[in-house]
Length: 234
Length: 109
Ligand SMILES: [Cu+2]
Image (cartoon, rainbow over all chains, first blue to last red; front, side, top):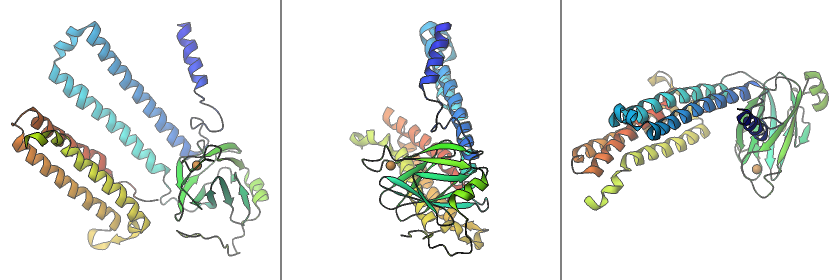
């Protein structure tokens, strides 16, 4: 029993469930939804594994029981009914949570533009202020990251705040993030984009709203920003 | 027909795969052209996007049903044909299960 506990604890520690890039430590609503889905999938996957392993064990240890259950019934239940019930549940959970992560008809949010190129990220705030490989966010507020690329397809991913979305040249994608509280989170490029892909990381710093305003400057809404906003803008 | 019969095992799921590729491609094309914002008044406000996806889905459903109908007539010619028939039925069920989402899920951001 002790050995089992030690192995389990060691496995958990080694599997890197914590850290700046851990999707299992969500700090915002989008990431929380994805984390919930992950736990649901893990639980269901474990249950399926245990059931299949038990039936396999029975085949060796008590083959008579399985024989009595009958071939046709085993195929009908084990091959059709049970998988269908489990998969339906998982698909329903995935679709419901997926809908909640989308930015569809949920009102306006602060917009920050992100332009990816080999192999760096540039972030532009409403007032025109820019940062490289460092994204400032106001905590507790919805922010739309408006993604595009200057060369090849990159992937924007801040695991502790939300899902990943591609930054595509000639196209604009929008992902909505919200950091519950101030802190520093890790971000990575999640789509292979060339030799410099692996180190194409960035940091996300979430600040109290007034600290955020101090850093990126006033979001001057009266000034006409020259940022190309439409699709295919270059 | 006999030498080619082993290909029939995949007939149903070939239609499923074709539907998958067509829906996946046309979903993105429709979003790019903004078809999800074009509401068709004559159809109770259904968007052009949903309409075209439904059309693709129904065409492939019909094709899958045709495969099932053909294989049903041949299913007593031997084990492979029986298997191909049930695989096609499974593919038809899988099509409804995997693609029915086009009727109620959000299509674009
Ligand atoms: Cu990359």
